[in-house]
Image (tube, rainbow over all chains, first blue to last red; front, side, top):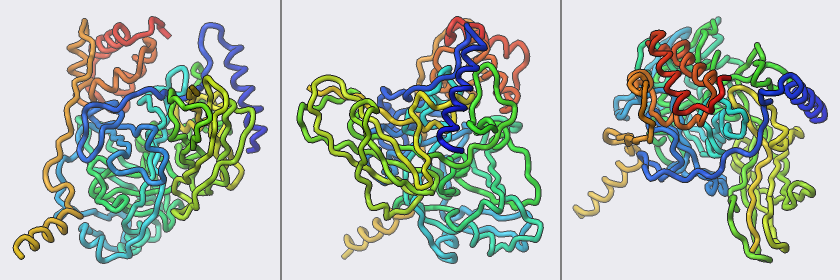
Amino acid sequence: MERRDFFKKAAVVAGAAAVGSSTLEAGTTGQPVDNRKVSMVTFPEKRPLIMYSDRPPLLETPREVFTSVLTPNDQFFVRWHMPDIPTYIDPDTFTISVNGLVEKELKISLNDLKTKFEQVEVTAVLQCGGNSRSAFKPIAGGIQWGSGAMGCATWKGVRLRDILDHAGLKKDAKWIGFNGSEKAAYYETPEFIRELELTELDDNVILAYEMSGEDLPYLNGYPLRLVLPGYYSDSWVKMLSNITVTNKYKKLFFMDVAYRVPDNETESETPEKKFPKTKPIKKMNVKSIIGYPENGDKLSLKSHTVVRGVAFDDGHGIKEVLVSTDAGKTWEKALLDDGKLGRYAYRAFRFSFKPNTLGKVTIMAKAINKIGEEQPLSKDILWNHGGYKYNGIDEVTVEVI
Amino acid sequence: MKKLILITALLTSALFAQVKEKIEVPYVAFPIKMGKGFDAIQTNCLMCHSFGYIINQGRQSKKFWHGKVMKMVDHFKAPMDEQAIKETTNYLFEHYGNGKLK
């Protein structure tokens, strides 16, 4: 879709909502909430983070962390779905099972994974589909994340393809199901299972046991998680316990009800009239976040400020990041890092800024990827009931004194 | 020499055994409001998730809260009867409502 078409459609949808109701609000968007402080309560292997829940644990990374390409493990966001997650997994006895439509069923130990298969690394962004959900009005149900339900790490492990080759796929194999070890309180609650179609599989899809040089932190899926570069994090199953190959798609709550957007061109709807057909969120759109300065910071007049942040997409790669210091009237190119961590990693950007007028200044950053997709203004993001896939242009307002 | 061996042992074990013992996820006491229907909230909501989930949603309409309760019943299979659904919805709307029915 052409960007022009996108805005044309956006205007039509917004207009329809406004005409159709005088008392009900139309769906609108603004900047996500950005004033939450880190919690006094720290979680295992984590520094203090913004906390929404302890059970299941939900932790958000503060804005200041988004100045560097790799997010430290102890500041990496956390999101679980079920109340019961194993509090101890013995690395010496842990095995991952591979079964279903395979020539031979496997139970692979961590040690075998690390020694009997080719070890590979991929640096990739992990982002919750509901990241920045607090930007949507009226509120889209779910955790009201600010912009920090995302991070970037170097994941080390074994290619899923190598594991499947080792087991030997049967002829009619079509879907791969992944189970995590988190458990619900009730037996009847659907388990957290994801399915991936074999055609979606490439050599970047790995089973990772290491995150930026350390074991996976417990809260990020120790001892093994699925890594699906370019996809939102609901597909990156944590504490992986089982892989099942099937020939039929199995209906699953976390794929058929949750984590879905309207299946129309603009992936949008109005709060009053939900679009009947939906599709999985799957791949990430182009986005950038300013890590420095932060909202409310005070900068000295004529001081040498360096605006810093990170940009990413689903693997097409970032072409450029533009920065505006006059509320979007003019845009200039930021400097990008060398990008040597690959197309799925953050690209760090920086932009020199010497404020020469007193008072409030709004700094904005807009990323454009290599296929020409660019971030819309936050007010042009169209509403969807799950509050997914927000990628509005980030803004921070500072005061020059 | 003994010291050196000890240090080496520590170094090798540190790399791949960060979770050597049971991890404890801290308990957080969220400032949930007391009042009529709180018992139903404690019985039906807390089994699966902390009060953080409730507080985090902000003030919402009755329709929103009813929808949330029904999501728990329909999709997450919370064993709640009509009475429990009514009590939890009313509590949520009374304490975390925005005054609007829809």
